[in-house]
Length: 514
Ligand code: NAP
Image 1 (cartoon, protein in one colour):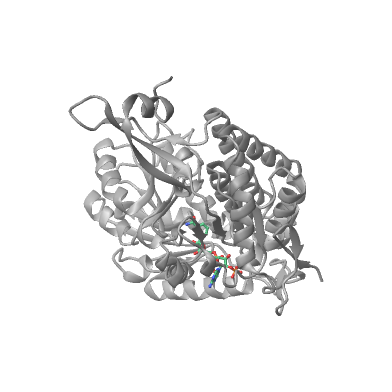
Image 2: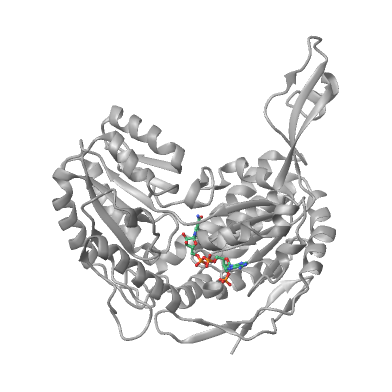
């Protein structure tokens, strides 16, 4: 049995503790194993700080950007191999696998392009300078400089390549070395990506290290110039954030966690509106894509009372038609969830929702003799203020349908009961209603996505995370923020206010040329 190795301090190294098996979730076949332990994490952190950081900081943004672009090409060249691993170890259909892998290469290339545009700079001016006293000469200018520490990235199992790619793109472009930890259930794909990155020889030693298995006491070695970016469940996020060393030493922490994303149909939308069909298609696509194991997947569907019976019938018809099975079969539209533990969690979650309403299709019963399959499941709950609907992210192909009155204020109250989400999608042609809803949802969401007939043919799916726009959300969603073009670099950089002579500061550090 292959044991996945970690790449630390310039060498590949297997762990020493009892193995955790990695499986094909469609068949239960064991594919490899991961062992934790045996890694000196103090040395790993020192290796990044002493070698990786100085090497990156010696480069310009353009040089770092060029590396990211080349890494994107290296991964893209192995696309078919990576897709096959995503199918066997992740239970992903070819389409689902591409979503993860192309997301990684696209984001690396995007940040590569940003770096090239920034050219020979080694820091970023942050906004315009300001005159600070009555006399014109005393002046202030904010700048962003790379922090001299290391970025620890703890990734979730559901996006092994995109998760690692988007985080490392921002950190490396900012000039900070990374230590990437893969989510274990899908670590075979993450491990292969790490091999490709290391073997490419593009990154100077110490700038990229990879951990398969647990991170041991890694967080206890982080200091004030370091940071931790975590993606995963809110429970694990809360545990990590409470680490005494992270608190004592003010280590920067970014958390991307659970989210009860909502899809909202507005009362003005009728069957002959293009946006109505888009709403139905997006909800079904979002529920089945990656078997619902997507942080941005729709979990709550809110529909005006007068329309809810019709929407329910439409969704049931489309969801029961989804072909579920081994994604190695190309006609299959939805694969299994990632592991036996995920299957048990999803089934328990369906039972909790079902207790508050009525299962319209799917359910928690077994759908195959082997493998970790769940049928696309829609639960109808007649009371949109029911606590259970807004309390629990069921991380599978599961959503709750609820009626609401059509009133914008009531709708905002229902959706915001989710306690903070990554994205809400709203389908409406009524500008006044939409404005009220968008402004009401914005404080509780990292992203609000609006479709009207005007853009129905051009929208990208609401679950798609784009490097140009921020990704994250308040409250339950972790309170973090990633991506958003250059915004994504600021987590890895120190914003410093420089104050002094205008002529010197504005020309050397601001937007005025010498
Ligand atoms: P998880 O169980 O919380 O694990 C996430 C990561 O944390 C994994 O790498 C895991 O390693 C690691 N981990 C667990 N306990 C740890 C500890 N005590 N110390 C250090 N690391 C620890 O979440 P998951 O099941 O992988 O992912 C599903 C969750 O991620 C869902 O809730 C989903 O909503 C969320 N998610 C959020 C986003 C977002 O951007 N907001 C994106 C994707 C997923 P092991 O795998 O080795 O246990």
